Length: 272
Image 1 (cartoon, one colour):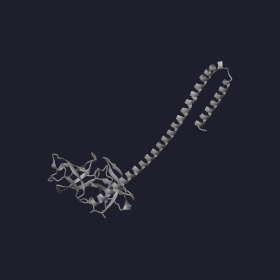
Image 2 (cartoon, rainbow, N blue to C red; image 1 turned 135 degrees about the horizontal axis):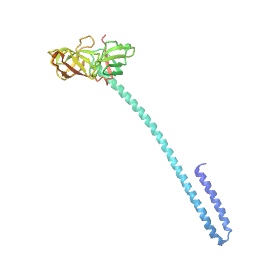
Image 3 (tube, helix red, strand yellow; image 1 turned 30 degrees about the horizontal axis):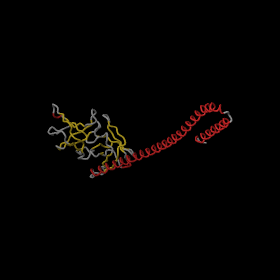
Image 4 (cartoon, rainbow, N blue to C red; image 1 turned 60 degrees about the vertical axis):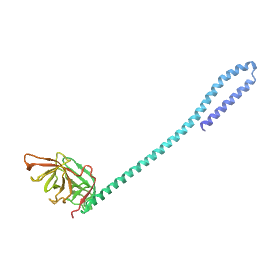
């Protein structure tokens, strides 16, 4: 039984009581009637007002609770829709990232079309002053071997130093144990670029021939000497030239072309 029905029954009971009371009054002497009516009115009227107010309140609450149920349901529907939209957004971001990766592979493959390459992406990195390595998503099952050169869109990354069935570790050129034989764009003479312990953002170029004229901003390439790296791959640009009292001890700092903290797609040059 709902609240409206209960209120109607209660109102009916009150009405019957009032009718009985009025019948009783009809048998009362006229001179006593006005006094009894006054008393009855003072009793009945407040009661009627209370029940009227109660009924209005119950009816109002019914509407309120009905509206609340509708609002709660709408809120749940919005939460469900929002969750669905978030899922779709994540899926779109994944697709976008995959497309970007594929685009990077295509750009790399076209740029280094003269080489036979194996595409890979970085799955782990350790870039610090003491050790600078990357772990790639390919291994011996993909034809990767130790000693293979690794390149990115901007230039030289490093070479493979260890391989498992499904992964390969790369020693990047900023590693303090790395040494690369190079040439500068303004001279054909060879220099050596090494990683440093002091700063993992630069290379130190040394063994500079006394007759070589270095210019800040010159591009540094692999020389092909040493048997590890093919000739002509960009390493970076000369950032600063440091002269000493002995010209044979002068050196330069080289800013790598590749940002090793952000590189994510690479190519491995297949030397076979």
